[in-house]
Amino acid sequence: MPAKRWTMTFGLFLLLAVSAVAAGSFEQALEQANRAIADKQWQAAAEAFGAASAVSELDAGQHYNHACVLALSGSVDRAFTALEAAVNAGYTDRAHIERDPDLAPLRADPRYAALLKHADALLKLDQRQYGAKAIETPYAETLSEAERIAGLSRLWSEAKYNFANFDLVPDLDWDALYLKTLPKVQQTPRTQDYYRELIAFLAQLQDGHTGVFPPDALAAQFYSRPPLRTRLIEGRVMVTEVLDDSLKQAGLKRGTEILAIDGLAVHDYVRQSVLPWVSASTPQDLRQRAYGFDLLLGPVDRTVKLRLGQNAHDSFEVSLRRWSPSEHVALKIPGNPAFAWKLLPGGIAYVALNHFDNSEAADQYLKQFDEIKKAKAIIFDVRRNGGGNSGEGYRILATLTDQTLATSQWQTRKYVSAWRAWGLTQAPIGETGSWPADLERRYEGKVVVLTSAQTYSAAEDFVGAFKGMKRGLVIGEATGGSTGQPLFLNLPGGGSARICSKRDRLADGTEFVGVGIHPDVTVTDSVDTFRAKRDRVLDEALLHLQENR
Image 1 (tube, rainbow, N blue to C red):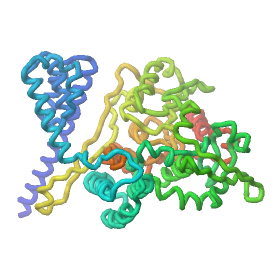
Image 2: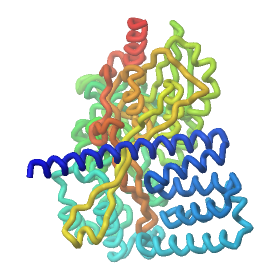
Image 3: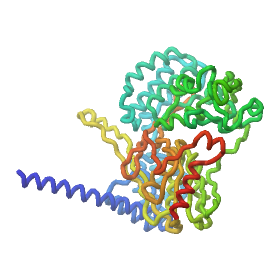
């Protein structure tokens, strides 16, 4: 028996070792394919995809890219085989297939039209199974009871089978909450009230990538606010920006403290009138939302009364009109640019990366890299970066190393109905991501990254990958602690929702969703430094770089 047990253990060890080698070979082959695509070496890319597929099954996107490079290299028959595999694996975006110039060599072949027809059939079946067109009704001031129940039920069922983070809310009984919410939506025929119930319902999942969005027709009732910005600093609510002269004439200015709202102490007001409708993943995420953008939201036709000043004995009251979203747009307040940089004293480059919504931040950084790389050190500031496309951040990080970046681990739920019938638990699927180094550009100097609770989603992916590189310190506050892939849904009455369907971790497996990525050096604003317009976080970064030359 001992010998047999040893043999089985050795066999398991050998299997795991072989699996690890296979996984490494698969990733290496895909990296070779991506490099070949970047160099427009279509035949080499096709061979690399072929090598990867010999090790492990390609996903839909990988099959599709394989088809593209095969078509470009003139291997039409093999391209059709790969494209069919992509469609069967779930790539059914007909519009993209038809406009993709890479597939032009296939379009005159009769097999092309047949493959599009097959893709349409698969998509139609998928929409029948997972769509809900019948309940995606247009806006009306009131909705039928059936519509209201259907909308709530869709949120409940879609989250039940797709939400990636139920383990982070262990005390939540999702089914019990559904039953508790049912009579509330039955008793709220007005669409405006109905959506407030739906927002509160999904907020219980405590996830920043999950939430309900009211119909556009109700935007002025949900998203109107006075033209000012606020932030919680040292437990005090400070006005950070006044966006219209009428408020300045009423006594508001940067650094004014809000003591009370509509007759309630500011923190009591937040607990009663803000928090129940905020979807957030972490305490720091909740604070920055509740005391920032969400603080003074309300109906456009209802004023908000503020008590302002240093304390209750040295204060004054103002009643402010809430401005509709369209009025805020008319202000034409410039937003933060995606990218900005300047050279600070001491030869340190300050690079602000304010969003990854498009390729602008990475494009501009790479365009100006030859100047930036002359700096003795680089400070990347992502404190106001709410995310976007993770790949844009990785393009920037790729210039800081000659090694492949380990980006993150991700997983998503996979439901197999037969497993449930057999009494088996459902196991998630996922993989570890990577990004190739930029072989044309390399910066070897010191690097620091600045973070805050507003560092979010794809910006957190940037921070997490940077920490894994061990290229420098992260300085500031813990990040927002929420990233993932939202699943978007339409609801009765013209509104919509999103449910986080993907769970991300750092490349080494460390959890940060529901926690945040903690900095190496924690630095926060104080009221005094804020009013003095000093940037404590940037000051600390400069001090660190000067002391460690």
